[in-house]
Length: 139
Image (cartoon, rainbow, N blue to C red):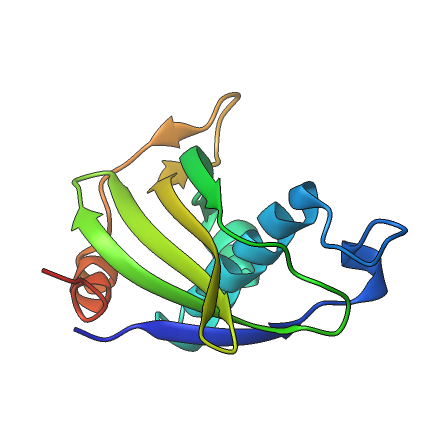
């Protein structure tokens, strides 16, 4: 069972005036983690996905539990694993920590969609992506 790790430093742009991460900014950092995972490990960047292949992976559901606050200049470790691989969706688990302290847990459902046409339509995952997802799946 492998996990994808991405370190992100909390910047001023992520914080409220007190220097605490403003919760909507976590969702931007979560999306950045997913985007980097697709580029780094799945070799399927969002640029290739959207501009060349005309497909996408919108978030269909996200459940988030905030465990402890994060502060300006904290170095956060985003740990991503695959929970379940569906026909047209994938469930991810994300844990965010700082110096071994859990800050956030999230469960995310991404759906593979075709972006051609008036409305995005869910489609079956490509077999190469399904195989790459499996390398990050936990039991």
